[in-house]
Image (cartoon, rainbow, N blue to C red; front, side, top):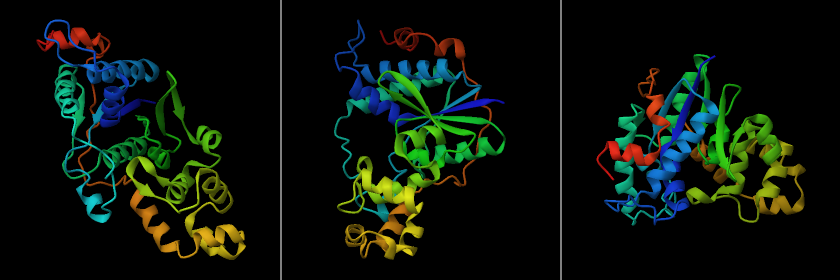
Length: 278
């Protein structure tokens, strides 16, 4: 069975930019390339781990989150985009991806998470194994027997499936969205229910499975949880719908994701030199 690897491009970009010292520069031109080094170092590591038959990188566009922003003004309002240097390096990263013949997409209408999920679903339908490389736990909600997440954790690559999700969170993958609604998603600036943290959210969802079932059995809750969840049903159902990753976008899916494996394994300095950056 063929394996395909989908890369969460901006997750790689930000993790590399803030994870590799800004002093990382080319020797001659003195161009800052910390994000470039980190991006392709991680890409080589994940390639060697998975050894995929096909590879695609999906980036967020400047306009891809506009629809969600209209529905919730708080969405990603905590993100800061003042540092232009990161986007200067993004241009270099895209040039190297072209050099490596790696297909990448930056959809102007849709958020990268939804594009990735739509690709994953279509590959899964065709009996392909899909690995999503991202440190964003939100993707847990779309995992199934043929779709897995690869995360970089303490220098290791950890693969998440339903068993690993149970070990980590104490809930199944199909319960993660309900847990996220209760607990909130701090990385995206979405609030959960005040007074309910990770431990309580996990306990509630492990017992009731879903937001819907929780309120159908509201009278069975403890006095404390009744107080916290009073008048929260509409909010939680709306947040659950908002946080749900779409996998049904009307986009064209390319199944031909060949790339230059030999060049991919070359060090970043060599790849930069091929672009005339030294």
